[in-house]
Image (cartoon, rainbow, N blue to C red; front, side, top):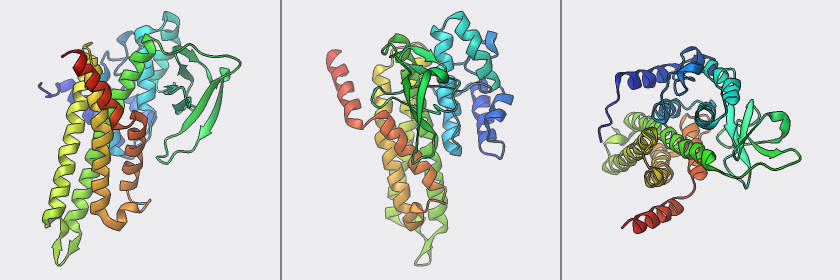
Length: 311
């Protein structure tokens, strides 16, 4: 596969990075740059792109370490564009493109949690879209700092997971994997800078063989996270079957991402556990993504069953 980005994809990626890696790293700035509508239909103020382009933006968000509701809002808006009624599209999509509307979805039945639940103007519960007035939301504290909430429907239940909801969750999964790419890459850069400047026995510790080997392994893991995430997102964007590719991407994002952060923490030594040092943000966020995606073993078991069924 050729992962060379088109000029437009490169422009989306670079513009997102410029905004998020600066003092302008706000929701309003992304809206002003027409990035929030990049993956929405043109008739609703978008640019008509898909999950792969969103993934490139999420990669830059991970690299910048900035918590914004980019993934939940855009993925939910894409699901509305794909499966929603004409009225739902008119109600929600233009506001997403202008930055006035935040959307999210409940990601699990037990517990029924949703990122940015308190900030959202509408929340997917199963295959239904609810406004906050129809829901009970209990705020949750998270180690990473990402706001989340437990969500329950007042006086009733929502329909279960359907094809539309599965479509949304697949793209959410791919987005998390792409987000993990940026987090791992930034942690690797922080580690390279630190070990190049930290001296022991009169030499930078980056010149020590054991340090170089650990960093090299982390680099390999980061590239594996990137390639598998790109493959899954690209197949989804092309409308191709992607269940196996998502399982592979989930494995590498969870397992590989964990190894990258362990290496970064190890090579930073004591400063790595300082909550004021930048690495702390990337470590906690990576762990949250790992736990959201689930442990590596279930992904490998699903992949194994799929390979056996098609052998």
